[in-house]
Length: 442
Image (tube, rainbow, N blue to C red; front, side):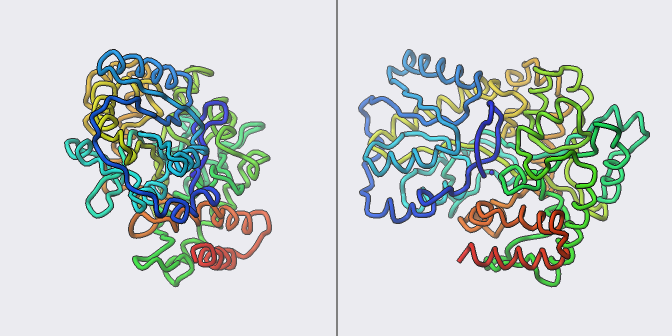
């Protein structure tokens, strides 16, 4: 949920509370008068879009033309990478020229906007649908964003290599590491999970911890990763990751989103993590590879629990003197044009709304048909309550900025580096990480 958008059109994770523009937003926005709601004058709608793939940009261009013809209202679409979005939103509010609708990719930012009363509840749009697990993030019963997709980090694996080596899909850390070791052969490496101080590592490398039952905070926001229950689990995870590191290609410290994606699509690693974009990239760049790749959730050490790393994107409607027009537009976009939007990245935009999966219009897409079994598997991961669905930025008892601060400080990747690169004792690496977490959330 984190993070940047696109390096060469590739979804990376959201930029969480980046810089003073986010963390200082309360001061920046305090004292602003709340504008009147639901004005009826048909003014242009200012829409901030952060999905910058070619097909998605083409969709929004068509959408603006169609809505002008339908409703007589102009939609002005401003498209920027997601790491620039929150600054654009807050600058617009401060300058008195706010966006009416905006793409937000971190629930902590939604929380900040809601606390400052700069966005409106969207229950009238969300309540009529059923949603996947852990995606609406209500605040006192009010839903302040419209999540349009999941971007789950899943483990991809080479089905053809598993068959050739007689390997089974693993359900324990030991079995997974053994498979990675068995598939190292020449330039082909066993896996790639980033360990650098970047969003890719935060998103791709820690769901093994969530499967193991590790939590960063208790219900009172105390850091607990180093308590008597969590510390041994976290230390065992570091030992496991050190074992995996020996099967990775050189450069795992520098690896980012595009590196993992390109290695999976090229077939140079047998395992790696990413969202549905892998299948779209394989279909485009290496069609034979798409059929060789399977997906699995992250597993725990004992074979009892699975997890996926959370990711998501959504829209907010800002409280402006044009909110009425914006809500009418959003109802049209999220009903009449929702399928068309999702088709602009058909496997990567995993629906958050459960009715979409059974919508024949949505299923009538070449890539969705091609990867139908994998898409059904992805659906199960967000409807099966036994699958842990969380991430660094969604840890804790409720939506809050503190997990975002932990994300942005790269505490967790540094813990990996201390173990793997500096050969620090695992328990000591966990203790150092806990101390830094306590410092950054003060």
